Picture 1 (cartoon, rainbow over the protein chains, first blue to last red):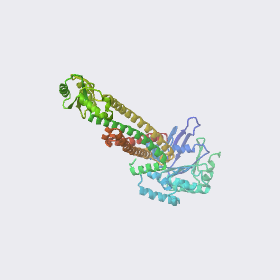
Picture 2 (picture 1 turned 120 degrees about the vertical axis):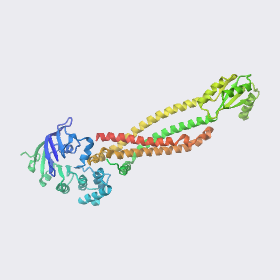
Picture 3 (picture 1 turned 90 degrees about the vertical axis):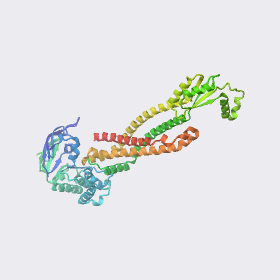
Picture 4 (picture 1 turned 45 degrees about the horizontal axis):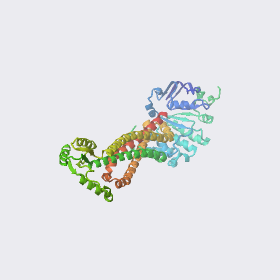
Length: 230
Length: 294
């Protein structure tokens, strides 16, 4: 699904954000990407999402070399990827239902099908009654659930989540994580960037650790997260 | 990208509803530019119509040197102006006409004999162009016994030169206004696009193509252009309704002025098309710049 070979990313005038990262994520995996702030987690997600290009190395996504994909084809590639952010990135002036409908509208799904699917999606996260509300009137947990169902609306093969629980209390954190694990159980490959150790402890999944842009560990154990020296 | 005109138009209208001030500023800018252009074009059209009206009433007078045989002069003038009506105006008749025109002030002519005013031969030349009048005057000047020819050329040539200059000025003004308006509308719409950069970012996150993102903005620009043009047309029609009757009161020739002279349908359609083009160009400039940076 995702393969990185000696990938580096540098920004002019800054220390390298990523250095010589080699990593492979298989279809259907659930992987945590962890590390301290500035370790390069978000940069890695941006490269996978084709928001930025690697300075060197190669990144293969769905078997395609990202560097060789024409810019006009990137939107079509992104339709296979759902993205969730810490700050939800919901459109405040569109209703909850309209926000969830966005990926489906982009893919030109018929309006009737969009309405039906949005209703089902919102029902699946217990937010059907909030469909006509605007995001600012929702709690943080509700907003993130909306963001997750929007990311999953078009049934993407890959779900990227960048600190999806960063703004949530423990109870809401579990709600959102349950949505991500449920998506993974349905076959979606999930990559979650987080520095929340409690999540890593609760969900025993593969953990990839970055430190100052370098991949320092890759395995199943929570003991191998950033800051813990083997 | 699939063509979905209803979806994109609804998105554009939603955008305008959410940012009404930006939409109004864009529309207002286009309105001012098109109104100024239309006003100038309308004034030019009116001036040209007045020139034509003058040509319909034109009379060219050939004043004769003292002692010239009036009958011979009439024949010679008629030969120089084939197909035109030629009238002899003896000095006595001219004095009588002048006296009638002076009315209460006619006493100023007391003691003035017919020898002071020359005999004349008038050529009536309805519908003649200014160039034709000029050429005819030249031929009349060559007629033996003709001392002077008058066809009101002094003010007419000034008016014609003024109209010609105004026409060039209108073209330059239109080009400058169109460019300035496109830049202004572009900047205004850039604000609209900037205000919605988060929306653009999110649309791109969910896989929207540049076409999908930019189409509503282009439609928005088009609608603003059409709106501004429609307002300017309404204002121009209003100005015509108010100004032309007043002009008719002070300039009798203006009685010939019709709506089609000042604001012909070609001009109104041109303003509509110009507004649409400027709105579209402005929004294209704005959205392309923003997408290039996102």
